[in-house]
Length: 474
Image (cartoon, rainbow, N blue to C red; front, side, top):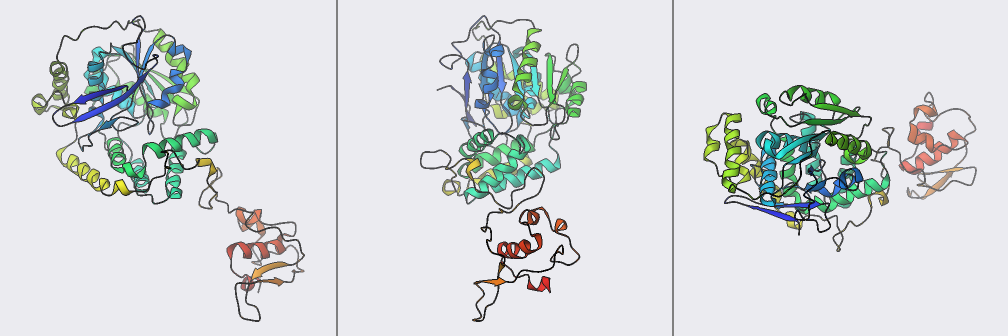
C-alpha cells in the first residue's frame, strides 16, 4: 500500500500518498521529468486532486505525487495537542527523505498553502517553486473559528442522519455553494460521512484545532522564502478575498522578481476543482517558465537526524528559542510552535471527544458506505433556498375539489380532531387579517393560494398549520 511510516519515540505517522505511475509508487517515476508534490484542498484529501492528475498538461509532462496530511484521508497518526502547521511541514520533509524524492514543485490549496510556505522556508533546497490556490488569512477570523467549532460539535455529536446532513449542508455552503451540481454535492457529503463520522470525532476535533489555532508566520520567515511563487486566487470569493493574496505578495520580499498573482473569475472556494481547467493552464504555463530539473534519484548522504537538525536550527533562529536545538530531530512534533498551555488544552479536548466515540452514531450502512445520497433526503422546512427563504412543502394536503374549504374545529360532539365544512366567504379581495394583503403574508403562504386566494388561504393555511382561524376572521 502507498504509505510512508514516520516513527519516533513520542510520535508515529502513516502518511498515505498516490502517484500518476501505474503501480502508484515513487520507484516508477520517470527520471527525465520534473516532480510535482501536491497538497489537497481544505476538508478533503488527496483523492480530490483528480482534476490535476487527469490533465494531460500535467500528467504527461511531470511526475505527480499527492499526500494526505496526518489528520486527513487515509493517513493515520497519534493524536496530539502539539500538532500545528509546522508539524505538517515537518511530516512532508520526512516523506521527502524516506521516499528519496528529488527537489520538487509544490502545489498547495487553501490552508495547506500555509504548510507549503513553512516547508519552503525550512527546506529551500527541496522546493523548486510554490503554487498556492486561494490563499487565506495567516490566522482565522473569530467568526470562522466560532463557526467551525459549532459545526464540529454538531457534526461530532450527531445522533441521527438528518442532523449530520444538516451540518454537511452548512459545510457545502462554504465550499461549493447551493447551486453546485447535485452529483458533486452527493460526492462531497458521501466523502465526509466516510472520512469524518461521529465515531472518529477525536480525529475531527484535532483537525479543527490545527486549522483554527494556527499562528501567523513572521515577516522574517516569509522573507526567507526564495522559490518562484505563483498565487492563484478567486476574484470574488468572500472567504478568500483577493486582498489576502495581494498582501502575501508584498510579504514575500525574498522571491526573485516578486511573487506572481493570477486572479480567476470565480466565487467558489475549491477552485482547484470547480475551476480546474484555468487553474491547470496557468500552473502549467508557470512551470514551463522554470528551469527543468530532472528527477534523477540520488543516494542519501545524511542521516535523518542530520537532515532534520539543520531545519531545527532554522526554527531556533526564526522563533528566537534555543530549546529547538535540544529537541529530537527525528520527531515531526519537535517542530511544533504550540505553547505548553495551549497544547494541554488541545490534548484535553481530544480526550474529551474520544469518550464514547466507539459507540457514537454512524451515518454508514453495514457495507461501510453512506445509507443514502444527500440529494435523496426529504425536504425540510428548516432548509433555505438560494433566495434565503425556507418553504414548506405545498403538497401537504390534496387540492380541494368542492366549493367549500375545511378546517379543524369543534363539532357538536365536542371533538376537535375532525374536519368540518365551513361555508365559502362572499367577500372578495379582502385578506384574513383585514388590513393585511395576501402579498404581505409571506412567500410560503402565497404559494398555497389558489384561484380564489382568500378562500384557499382560509382552508389550506388552517389545514397545514393545524389551528383554527375563526378568531382572525372575526
